[in-house]
Amino acid sequence: MQKTLIALALLAAAGAVSAQSSVTVYGKIDLGLVIDSGASAGKSVRLSSGVTGGSRLGFKGSEDLGGGYKAAFVLETGFCADSAAPVVSAGASVPNFCTGSNQFMGRQAHGDLSGAFGTLAGGRQYSLGYLNLTTIDPFGTGYAGQVNNIVDAAGVRLNNSVHYTTPAFAGLTASGEIALGETAGNWKAGRVLGASVNYAAGPAYAGFSFYDLANPNGSGSARRDYLLGGTYDFGVVKAHALVEKADGDPTGAIRLDTLDLMAGASVPLAGGSLLASYIRHDDRGALNRDANQFGAAYNYPLSRRTAVYAAFARIVNENGATFHVGNATETGTGNKAFNLGVVHNF
Image (cartoon, rainbow, N blue to C red; front, side, top):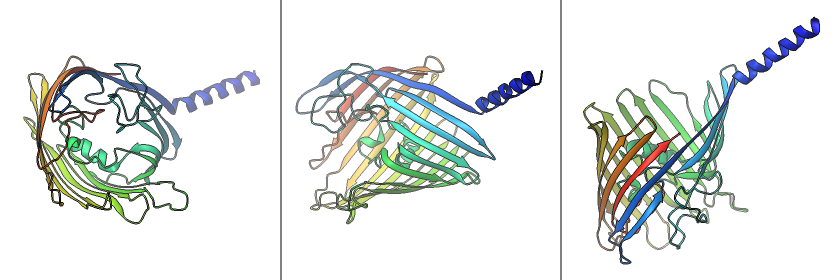
């Protein structure tokens, strides 16, 4: 009898422990028709994976450690839903349109510890500047009209990074980050520093973020971004606005000095959402390569998890500027693009 009671107690304890931890499998499949034009090579017509956001498979979990502490993790890999083409690093000079974060667990891979002190996270994770940009952009940095066709995305994802975020106080949080370049003999080479202050309460969001990428020799900044923006939901329309100032010495020959302005809106319409934005890129450097972008999209949910979408964007480049209209996973080939597709989240 005593052995039976002990066995039942152990089973109950094991059940209590397992109930305090959880793992969730999630993902996204996004397939869209993309038509690019305006390039010297001519029009590009293709089926693309990840127009509104990269197709992905992810695992996330958390464990209650007691005393208000919690451990968590995120593992997220991208994939090409339209083909079995080999993965190619973003920026490579080959005609592959499913690139970038599709290495195994290349989207995110980090572990977190949270409690009354805030949250500490380490691994490959989104930069603070990119998280701020994603929140402000009416397109969420996807579709043809994404703001980061022109506005720098502050590194997007950072390897070897550590983030700290304070607890929220009256809607305010502050965060800091460092991503180590891990160059032997010069720990400053290629390292990233970042910080953000964010306010989110009710219909309002405001965020300021800073991003500093060190030169390969670690002697200065290749790029610094200062981004301030926010959104306000009036019910009938949600307003979006940002300003980003960038400077630095990326090449050692021509200094970077730009100012980007974005104004946008998202409007509930006929059961879906109409999205639009205008961006002005002012190059204050010697080359004066300015640009303007207008983008619009309509997203219509078929269910809680599935939606169809259409989008269009056009960039007017000035003085030799070469900005392309891309989407969440592509840099694009021309200065105009049309998207039509379907996205399913699970």
